[in-house]
Image (tube, rainbow, N blue to C red; front, side):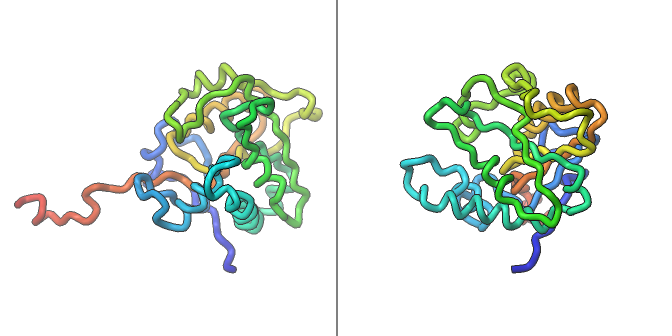
Length: 215
């Protein structure tokens, strides 16, 4: 299987992610097409990742986690990994919630690299919320209000790099809240976002010619 390479959020796709700024450094492997359902490999991967225990198709979740880790590992620069900490974005449910889903942590822990993979759940969510794909879209400020740093996992000094890991970049609210929370605790650390997919918003005029518009 050929190595999948990360692509960077740039001026061409930054407008799709409302809470990101030009100062944010974010990378993604695949593009999830909004409104396309299961159509496309990336869409199927995300749907399988988000399967809930007891739901139809849950048996595909473990395979999707393994696929994400297998694709991320070779795409991450080992030299960067030697000095980096991977920080999973907390799920919508806290660990004591029966619906808690640790898929991002499982992806991080399954990543293979020639460098040591340092995974730490440095940011803890203190109360459960509804998942974004179930309708509740919290702002970065609302998320920061329920995020806290797990000081027991902090070593001496600041890590040189932190990679905030998540499965999909949508508006960017979670990344904004994660980056702000981590940067306040580790002011000298360079923080980037690492995503399995980004949500691509189709252009409704992409297949429309000027002649069609003038009819």
